Every structure is written in structure tokens, then in C-alpha cells.
Length: 217
Image (cartoon, rainbow, N blue to C red; front, side, top):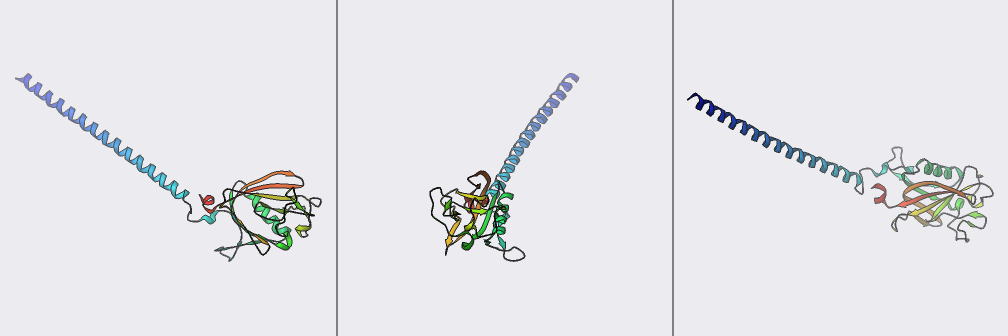
């Protein structure tokens, strides 16, 4: 009789132990599923954050370094910088050098009296007559710090080293130049590749024009 009671108690204990094991297994499965769901939610949050960062127009695209004049003391709007002499030319060149390897934005126009208008090619694409080629869609030239303070149209490589900034284009839509009444305007986003080489009396720099979407993506 006592053996039967002991056997019965053992069976009940075994059943309870089995039930507890099964319950633990269920809990483990539920916890694993919850962990998987949490990972999915985390990944979705990361994807969403990445899309938000890469969307065409972020909240403040003006965080991109900009070469422009502030129209008011708070910098609420930008105006074109007039490149009209040696000092303003060096200011633009310094801006390009300081932002090598970065995306930038430029609002500038080239004074026709200082630079002349866009001149036709003379064969080598650099000179027409005595002066360097004027600004245009394929690039522009600037005086270096060693150049004299006189109209750029009267400066040659015999006077000093001239900086030639070649402009590549990422697509047909990336067209930052416009000509109005003999004045070349430059407005848009660029990737700065920086100094390339010195050749034929020129320091060669390169930038690539980009669309607005490419610049802020």
C-alpha cells in the first residue's frame, strides 16, 4: 500500500516536472520570437533613419558649405559674390582649397570688365591673344597670389602662375553656368577634387558640377 502511494506521488511529481519543462520551453520560444520581432523593429528603424538621411531634400541642405554673400546679418538668404579683382579671386580659390574632397555650393558671377567674356578656342583651349580663356561651362581661370593687380584679361603666364579650374558635369542636368549680357553667372553644387597638376604655366584644379538632388543625397 505504501509502495503504491510512493509510486503515485512519483508519477505526480514527474507529470509536474514535465509540465514545467514544457512551460519553460514555451516561454523560451515566446522570448525568442519577441527577440526576433525586436530585431526586426530595430532594423526597420535603422532603415527609416537611413532613408530620412538620404532623401532628396534634407531639412537643411544649406549645411553644405556655401560661397556666397549673406543678404542680412542673420544669413537668411544668399547673394552672388562678385569676382572682380585679385582679392575676390583669391577668396574663391581659398574656398575651393579649404573644402577639397567635399561637396560645396557656389553663387558667384565673373565681372566682364575684369575677366572678359567667354572667348573662342585658339586651338589649345587656353589662350586667345594675350590672355587666358574666359569663364564658361567647361571651367574658368583665376589669378594666383603671385599675379599683379591688373585686369585679368591683361595677365599671361609670363607674369605669374594662373589657376585653371576645370568643371566636369555629372549629368546633362548639372549646368551651373549662365551667361547674361556678357556676364557669366555660376550657381550650383559641386564636388571639389582639388589641385591636379601644374602644366604650361597653369595650376590645374578640378570640380564636378552636380544636380541639387545629387548634392544633398
